[in-house]
Length: 149
Length: 282
Image 1: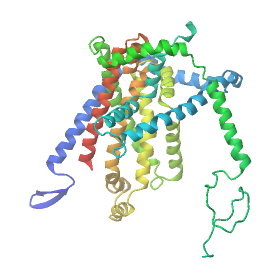
Image 2 (image 1 turned 180 degrees about the horizontal axis):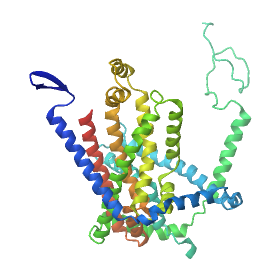
Image 3 (image 1 turned 180 degrees about the vertical axis):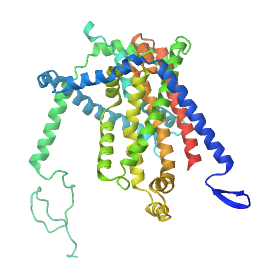
Image 4 (image 1 turned 135 degrees about the horizontal axis):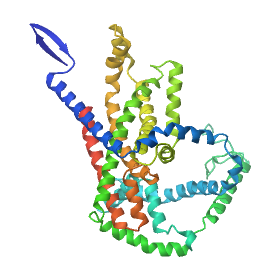
């Protein structure tokens, strides 16, 4: 909030001059950054495919209806696997998370200097990398080519 | 001393009335019906038996894999930034570019939808329409949307940008709408009492109340979008994910470790910066 003197009378303004300038400057930087980023995205886009998108989308949509229910016999096994991944994964996660939680909490950890940073490192690395990347890594380690055996 | 209220006898126990105070106590069962209780337990055990039995663990493969796992740990200790630096830097810059673009587009779209999805602002049809968009956006995982968008718009960062923008709508609009619904009504009413028009009411009565939270949420979404932009590349939607996938495919764990370390570093940096900005705003 600020007031300026304009020919002797006080005029109310939302922001002072410096704050107004700062606000405009932040907007200018933000807009310029967005325009630059958009330009880069645009450069590496094949616009021909984008203009063709409505036709493709309509094609995909029309082929989705009606769903082919006869295919469901192929789906029972992956569905069962999905359920197992969810339940067994949760159970193993509980077993592994419980000690880490106690080691990471400041009032239950046996050593604030050595064990707590280690527990926090486990938590951070589990959180900041997506589960898909973790599975990519594990599949790569566990040999993806099961059909080559 | 006879007036001490004792627990009513447990119907599941022997039912024998004793004059002495009961010496041992067991908590009442979580499920009252014993048939249902034991049935559920038996079903759970049967399910676990079947599911663990169908895991089909190949110990030979795990044994062989341990070697590669050790190689990955070794690679993580010695990340190789220089070997594929042009690929890594190009992918990283593309990821950052996608993050900025998609967050900006996502915020621009989700603010009107967030206002429309607040019950105290919008009439019922608008509210239902906006809530429908939010539900649609929230119900699909980013990867599934990315697969669809890559099929529609072709390979490249545009599909990723659209995916992340779409995912931003569900996140930001929902939380913004909830924040608008819990504003202080008296402030908004005071602005209305000065005779403000509807837009002025939004601008002076409501927007200042939700602005700090909107900025905080936007910064948080920027962070999420960066992490997701590393993943949508796996299905061809641009970004560092494609480089990471190639590194894993070629068993170049040192390059993969370099990429992962860069991702963790950028996420931590953005967390620090957003915390700094948030304290400045509030």
